[in-house]
Image (cartoon, rainbow, N blue to C red; front, side, top):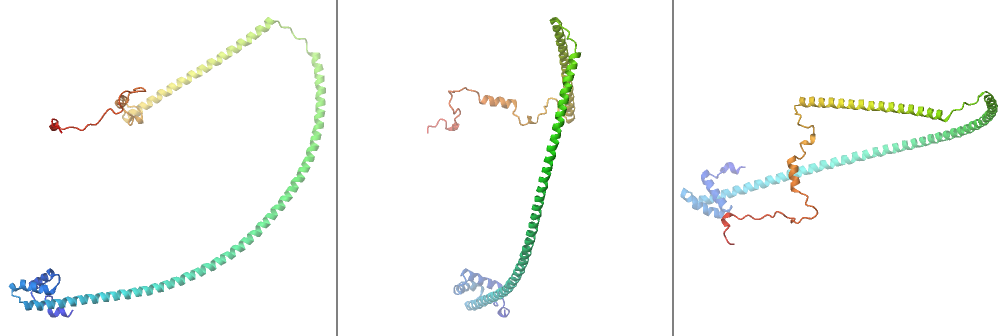
Length: 314
């Protein structure tokens, strides 16, 4: 830093001459010996002697050495700064890791203590729950035994009452049957005494009565058939009226939507094949029967021959 203010950025030379020197040095790949020879030849026409070129080369070499030394010093300083920063970070990391380890150990101790306390409470709760369940089971079993005994006693009493009731019912039923048999016998005897002799009917009269009943049954069936026919006719007329009303409503809706009567209300008409396409497909795949004498390949692609080479023999 003291060297540059003392000698200036160009070592006392003009900017143009210093630029020419630096160009010669660059052309010689920073070889000062070769650069001095080349610069002496190029700067001689401008009044710069060889001794001046040598002195300027020494000055420039010293400046380059100082510049490289400065760069090395700056690099060492930066490396020292990085090392110091790295050591500081490592110290901070070690301290942080130590704090984290201590905090983790403290958390684990608290967690283990809490787990032990929870396990103790859980064991106590399980013991209390087991005692309560055993008490409930014992009470339920005692209640079931008492209920079974009560049901058995109730079933015994009920069976005894049913047997007594069945015996009473059997006695009453026997008495009623005997009374009914006696009443029936008395009624039959009275009826035989009161019923007169049946009137004799001839075969012709019986046939006439049967024919009359058959004719009446036939007329009744005919009336029922006519009524069913009338109902079917009324139902068909009603369906026809409903169909006509639906067609009128559809026509009004179609006119309101701006569609003509020729357009069918078919959503598949857009994707359905046209009549021309169907005819073309039918003509492409005709039914040739079981056997066909034509070859399987009907069209063979040939290479086109230009007209200007049609008469040339190859």
